[in-house]
Image 1 (tube, helix red, strand yellow):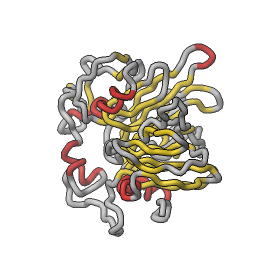
Image 2 (cartoon, rainbow, N blue to C red):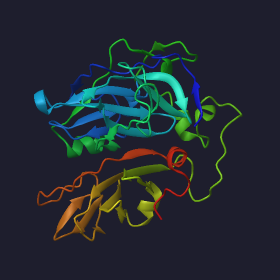
Image 3 (cartoon, rainbow, N blue to C red):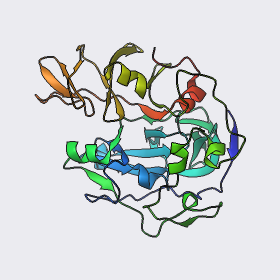
Image 4 (cartoon, rainbow, N blue to C red):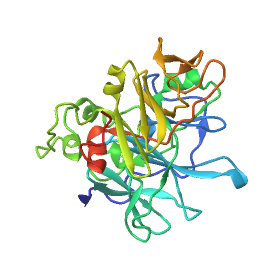
Length: 319
């Protein structure tokens, strides 16, 4: 694992006191990271590009669950973690380091460092410890709004400053209308060198997948399986598989990819991201049936193929 300091610590500021509302500043096709809560919450990538980590809490009182909503733009990796270790909540910030081009987080309680895509502590008091992945989904703002009319969305940070808004390592004033990684996402290259348009870009030696193919990664009991979005789309939008003894179903809908525990149904695609099984129709984005039944969403990592391969090797893909 190649770990290097790229930016000053906290040059990209995490969010510690998030606020939510019903009005969104961006576009209908913007991606948001969605967490099931009461009400459901959306964390826009447009905002996370400038902050990368949101320290939030789901629920109140004894039922409260502290979470970290994390996003690495270079790796396209959206992962939500339970941020408790040994029952105590940690608060995460952006270390300014990269590990294999992936965000390295640090916790402010012990200054331990954590690889974002894995949720593993790579240095410090908690070295070797693993954060627990929470169920989440990536979908467009329009999909979230249509499916969760009672949902709320993360609001911009007033007077925010971030290195992502700057041409150098010094934080600058944030304009959330700008998308600092748009050129990177449109380019063929991947990793920090590609983002900074340098010549020392990384190589990719496989032809079945592009390095920035979107993958949904499932891990359980030491088994890791990545489901590339185009492969699932080519299979009529639905794949059934068993991961560490758990039957799963993976749907490709509306440009997104979603995984649920499968009670044993044979799903057949219909139209508009809907699938027929068990005498009813299911929404592949939410896992909800017309008759009110709900498939349990699985804890998953959404990320680029090159990062999944960095973490788990070239054979850790479905099929």
